[in-house]
Image (cartoon, rainbow over all chains, first blue to last red; front, top):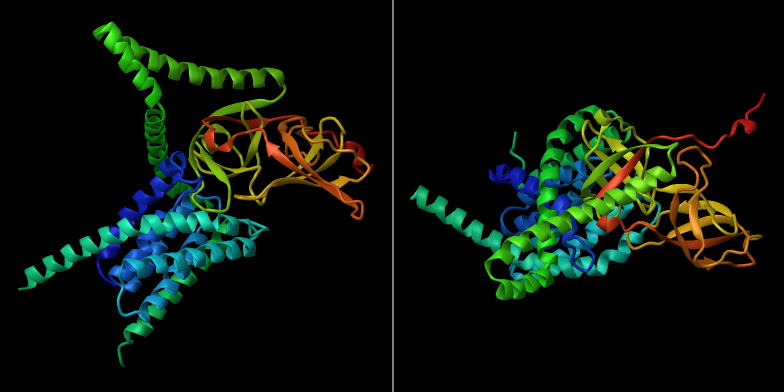
Length: 168
Length: 282
């Protein structure tokens, strides 16, 4: 794992605050996108899978602090979701925008399904109604992942170039 | 000893994180981490409260292009002084909005003087996509206890689910886990209201087939169970599902409260529960 973990904590904290206090005032199709999940997925693909998984874990912990669900449930779903994406990404040689789009759809599907199952297991929900929100959430995530992917790719390129320049 | 391969290392990391997450959720569900998380949540809710206020202001600014356009036209006609008047007008409108909300709440309090309440501001909404809850700026320091009912001027909002020193999480009546004993206004039928979560419908189950339920009937808390005061408005019946082959009928309820636009709520800190002493053995 790299030092990007130190970036993850303040970044995910910021995203958790946005997710709780800002996005509910500006919903799109009545939905709130899960930006922390999108950032974790993109970072896993762009940089290092282990880092992305760790980002997801941290994001989940911070989100659970503002949620009625038990601490650890979001972390678990984020880890499962990012792991699923990492496993698929491992089998693909080239990761462009289209691939990222497909990976995001898969990641969101796994996220919603695992969240529904875990909530049921922990007795916090007795239905799978969450699945009804899947289609608008997939669409929203598919739109939002592109600028996030572009941004993180740029950040990584700058970061790596800087390191190479420092080494030489 | 050989160093683990990258593949193996990855699975070790995933396994460790999954184990920690499961361990934390078990500890949290058993209540063992309450004081620790309350300590962590306290400073975070302060930031949350500030951010929520700013977001509210921004939202108001985004929602008001029509009045800005109107103001611009007036500025042309009445020149510089209108600027000041428009600003004053905007401020007064905001005050009027707050006043209206408070007036509604005070009226509600006046109708039921036997119930003691604390006013609280909504500072955040649940981050998880399926459970429905909101965060208010009152906690144990204000006398809030888990289980207290929460209402707005329009009706029942939910129950306090978790508390910290200066904030609380309120599980909404539309949440999947919410079950409330209810009574219908006209037919006097009783049943149990269950939330449907996001995308689901809030329904009343276990209604006796003998009752003729009408659409539009008002739904109230029955007070049975002692968790909620009796006769709190919940909403109206929007659909009736009656099948003679079944023992009970079901109704869909449209909640009276618009949960997305809540700003101020009442936490009910004390009320007289329905007297069930007749059921107690001598």
